[in-house]
Image 1: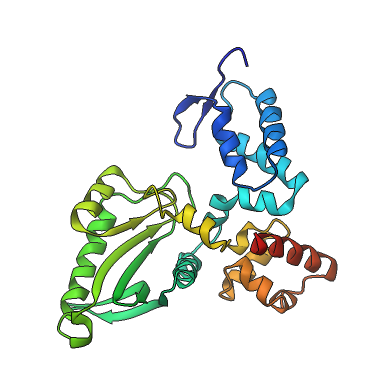
Image 2: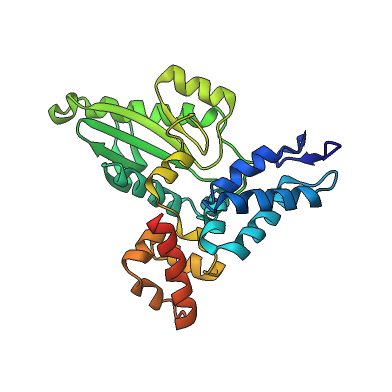
Length: 279
């Protein structure tokens, strides 16, 4: 392109279009490199001044969908996580599944007695002598984020629980830590407070390694909301039953039969889910 085209980010910020950023995001779909370059060049040729990143994303997603459903499913991962709502409970279950894959024994929605009051903890995770308490902050809007009030509040809850645990001999030798997981991002002050206080923070792209995105890639645990062959109503129906992973559908295809899904669509869903699970 001879002249830079300015595009509008989700935050409203204006920046020059960078084809390398688009190529990197397309590679996440695991489609072959020739297709990545072909799609990126085609999108570049259709760009207009003032287009939004959302419009560019939709173009890329639709092009990928025409090539491979499983590739487009991987590409829409961030959006799929946001579709785990409207409540935060499926996101809590999803985080629990990732931690289980990493070797933790987890429980969801546990009421625990602190030194001063009782607390409901979204996810508890135990492995060896590591005992983690995790608060999950789910947002269905990419523009929302966790400001410093969130880690301040979570850290005070954690300290109240820790004070109570240390009274018990079986907890005295364990390493305790509080964590906040979010599917969007943290403010600069929230990160500063987390680092200073020792509270763990995990967002879509924080920290640089072992963030939510990289851990999903490493585990291969895609949310069922990735699946392009499921309708919005069918996805919500499965979430309401406590099912959050494509892998759960791969392991137990009969779960789909309870949704009244016709055989042709059922085969399409299982094929797409298996492609995601196998990769």
